[in-house]
Image 1 (spheres, rainbow, N blue to C red):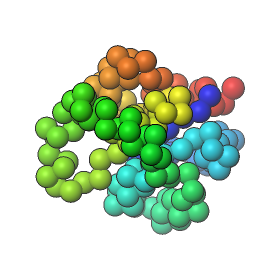
Image 2 (cartoon, rainbow, N blue to C red):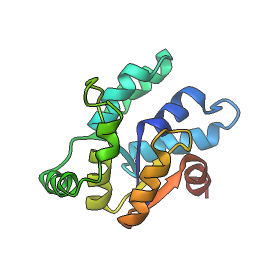
Image 3 (spheres, one colour):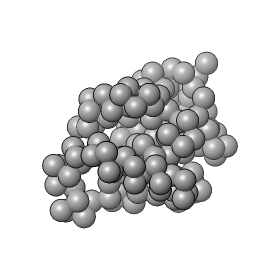
Length: 154
């Protein structure tokens, strides 16, 4: 299976995950990021650059820069259709656009649809419930970070 992660999962893996306690799982995560099974979009990287605090996390972000993709023309077309359908209204209500915060979720949806990837989020994310609902509604694979870690460890 292939995945697209939002910022909450990358943040969790870099700043919270007990790497020293479970190095095998952390290394497996890093391997899947390197081989393209796990990707993110460029907006997620921009957001993480302002959120991450640990020097090792920022270094990891730089070293794994190729996993953060720009969207393709096909994905841009899908994104336009999704915006026209009004499914991202929950983002505009959050004030993120007003505050010029990079907003990755529309790009994540477009890539997930185009590449048939599963969206992975942390349950603690404020938009978790609505994104899960939208993924189910659009038949986009969705899982939380705990299920994701269990799945990649098999």
